Length: 570
Image 1 (cartoon, rainbow, N blue to C red):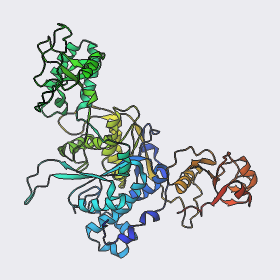
Image 2 (image 1 turned 135 degrees about the horizontal axis):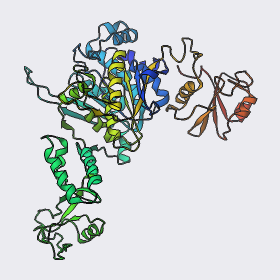
Image 3 (image 1 turned 45 degrees about the vertical axis):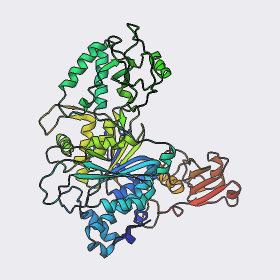
């Protein structure tokens, strides 16, 4: 497979391994709502933040969405999109050396993106996926880079987002962007017959309104239909809810549209033809000239259901129809080309944060569609270019129709943006707000939820000599040890020296007085008495400790000893 090359690649291809592990430090005053919700906003360089998050979340993320710098050369971005911010300059100087001073902007962009994509891949579950927004400046490089990191066989599609008209171009008016989509393991998705489907625009609002009418009218479906049709008519032209206006009949099963089940007009003469009696007149109903699409047994089964899945007219002179329920056709595949006016996202952000608060934000409805296609209740979504907080807002929207919420992790480099934009938007989306901009200043109800705000520790987990920092807790080191040993995120409870069992072997950690005694005889050193009080496991065992003083007994007990911190790759 062809690979992409650029100035500085050799210096960054393994750079993710050299990034030190840091700790996440919660900031209580910047957190919001239920901080135990599993949602995180992390302020810090996303390369360091991703490395800090790996021990807990490796292999656990179902969906990644990122909106990295587009590298247009425009200096006005909050994330400086020619990758020329002081933070990136410093990084390039340290990593690439003098080459970093002369790299053209495409080389700089690739040097920035490569190690981040390599780390992001480690977060994805086997059935996970990643979506990356980009425009013409780097789409070719991004596609080649993604094929190299994720594998060409895992490429799903490059989606084209038509965002609106722009008439100020001297040559070609470019009005679209791209979303590059890859799976972690596309073959696995095919094996499991996974289907990506998005919610049809406006459908949830229609179903919610229908449920409110059911509470009001009960089983008076005639009154319900009359009020529902008036509601549809009052909707403005272009409103996505209006596209479902033909769904205005209902029974106790739900809202439906009387759709025909005529036999297709394909010239065949042997289409099913049989009488369907009208429930009132008991006379055979009128039959379409092409016969029925369904066999008679299928129609009888539909009639036998409660309520019947056949819709009849006033009498037998009307051809009956099948009931197409809205809740049963509420999803559709996402098109590889779609239109959504880009101005809507700006208006949404300005209503929350004020006019001019954040240039060119992404649309939370579009991101909700992307995320909603691939996640299930309880899944985890990651965005390492947090920006205005669109991904978190999209997840909160999605959660309104889920029994178990999807969780999010956002990372934002800029401290001011993280506090005053990312955090503030997500907080207001959770708690509710009165719009700060726009014609309508009607209060917007909060979506509920919460998040924990964190910063990266100033000092790495390990010091310059490779020793564990003295203030590191057992739980913090346990996450790192588990990740180093298994390559997966730690999901256990770090309250015992037995961290868990992985692929048939038990993993233990003796550190920081977990046995309530820091002495050699009973604390961080593996001795006979210490081993005797450890939680039992019959199979092979891996024990991390400061030293091993049980000699040949280790082999007899099936123990593989690993000395901390030296056995840990830091």
